[in-house]
Length: 320
Image (cartoon, rainbow, N blue to C red; front, top):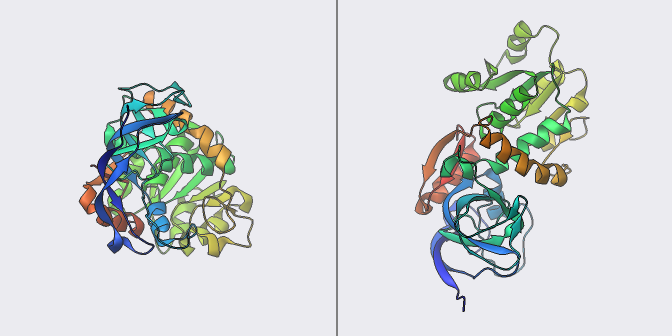
């Protein structure tokens, strides 16, 4: 008979800031029908984890136990009946990615098999744990603005987690890409196939020096007023501008608001379909995930604070 086991996991007994996070022993139930248990090797850290902790996606009345962590990589240790994922049946011993999951900052989790995808052998555990959320978000940006071969695509925040994937996807489509970044991150952006331009005063002029006619598409991953203002100045059709962060500033314009913000298009179908595409691109060596920092479970609060500051410099992961 299968029994419930325990694992160390990051939890919060209520809504608030990262100071509420604790590492505790939690129950990990045996997998039921359509479920699998994963021995977690790494978990991706994302701004949405902190938004969940703060109750920005809604709050439940009364006592709550919050379990952040939406994406993991690991090894399947148990499967329930009819455990089938997007790529087919899941088996014990499979190396996998889990997305979207709940409670990923843990040593072990039981999840629905529909959230489980094969881990590309080209990625290590940390890279695999950081592929999905940034990847599906970048895909949503690319699809929503119709990026195609020959387009001039401006990507704000090109050295961040979503930005780096967006650069690679745009280049794969045959677009010409300029990515904004800090001085220290320019080499990384160029290595992905884009031209790097430093953000800050005079940004529009620096871009026009490269593209006198402006850009066809602008993708904003940072949410600054500068990113929106420069995008509107350089892109003739505001419907080909999209943001995942500047919801208040861009509201009321033709700019596409994407993701989980107020009035934004969640793009659920696009993001779900993107998962297997991302796995395939990574497996073919066409998509790289740059992991900038890794933290232990006990330091998850620091990891979340770093990511939310916007200074992560790529993917940040927690390694149990």
